Structure formats: C-alpha cells, structure tokens
Length: 303
Image 1: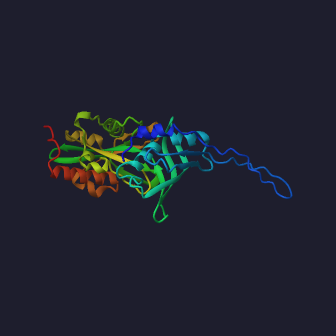
Image 2 (image 1 turned 30 degrees about the vertical axis):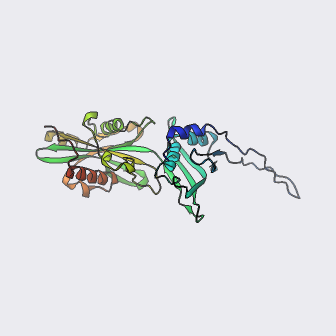
C-alpha cells in the first residue's frame, strides 16, 4: 500500500517520546555506586500500515538529544519509512517486520541533516532471520550528461575532483544533492552543472533520461542499494559549440572553493567515454542515452 511522506510525517507527530530517564542503582553488598551514564534516548512509532507492529527508535552512545530528534524528523528518515510501505516496499506484503532502528550518526549541513547513519532491525517473520540493515542515508541527487558537438565530433564534459571516501581523484558527471525537500530535480541539475563546469544550461533544454525507465523504478537509479539510500535522476543536455569553447573548458578550475570543491573540468570525446572512468553515473548515463537514442525517444538536436 502506497503511503505518502506527509502521512508518515503526521503519524510521527501523534506519538510522545518515551525516554528512559530512570536512575540506575548499582547498589552492592559492600557499597553503592551511581552510574554516570545516561540511559539512551528512545521513541516508539507505529506506521499507518502497521498499526499492530510498533517499533522502537534508539540513540546510540554519543548521539545527542538534538541529533536524535533531528534524525527522526528529517526528510531522509521519513522518506525511508515511506519507501518501506510502498507497493514494492519491504514491509508491503507483511512477510517482514521492523522492530528497532538504532540512530548511529548525524552530519548537519547547516540547519539540515546532510548524512544520516542508522541500523534497522528487520526480520523475516517465517524464519526469524534478520536481514542486513545498515543504512547510510543521503537522499536524492542529480547528475548531468553534457554532450557538446563541435566540428563533427561529440564531446562530454566531466569533472575531475578528489573523492576522500575512495581515496582517489575521479572523473565524474557534474552532479549534486538536492538541498531541500521541494524535489526540484531539474533545477538542481542546472545549478550544479553551472557550479561545476561554468556552463549555463536552460531548463527547457534538459531531458530526464531516468524518466524513460519503467514506473516501478520510481524513475531513479540506485547506485549502491546494499548500503545507501541515494537515488539519482540523470539528465541530458546537448548543444553545438565552436572548437574554441572545447579548448577553453579543458582544465578550467571550478566548484565552490569555499566549500572545499577543488574541481577541474575535463572534456573527452564521447566515443571514449565508457572507457574513461569508473564513475557509475557516467556508465548509467551512457546506457540510458544509447537506448533512448536507439528507440527514438530523444528530441532532435536544434541546429
């Protein structure tokens, strides 16, 4: 049963947090010692579609009171709860049950949560086995395949930047996370492309390649669903430029330097693109573009 994020949000507000702020006595035969550790923050929730199966949310050691409640109230967590109950959600057919969520870490981007780390205890009712449930939540993102035609050759515009999680510098599509809950995917794609390449794209020229996917996919791609909730919309932009523009773009330094984005623009022939990088966004974009071209789904490139 599909349940909106708004419904889940409303359900969250119906419940009063149940904190275990009870003193723990450690009195022994030879003396008494009071514990200096505070009990973990806890909260109970019943999902709209699972009225008879409430689950508990617990804060891991080191998670502050504010981080705990920010996590519960975040769009990242609410979207995850929503996904569980959708038509192809884990809890949809009733064979699985969610018993507990352990909030393990919160990274704030200003006033909003950028990254959320938690562990969900979801069990198969028939076997009693727990399925893997470590979650790194970062939410929706966008990427743009920019193709520029010049003197009979098609080029693609990439970004070259250091990626600390993999310890390498990676050639990638211009990409970025959505900054708010408004769901402006194409607007975010245009903004990220300009920040990372310096190219100003027009909204009307953008083609959502992921919109060609089957509706059961949600029109997004999941690059690492075994550990991360990130879902990406991939857009296409095509244009014609003079060779001078290609030369000017090559090696151009871009990105929000004050935010640590040390980006250089790289331009490579499209025919070499699939061999040039291990960025999965690139490879997915190539597959979508080639299939959409083969099936005649793309608008003609303006002259």
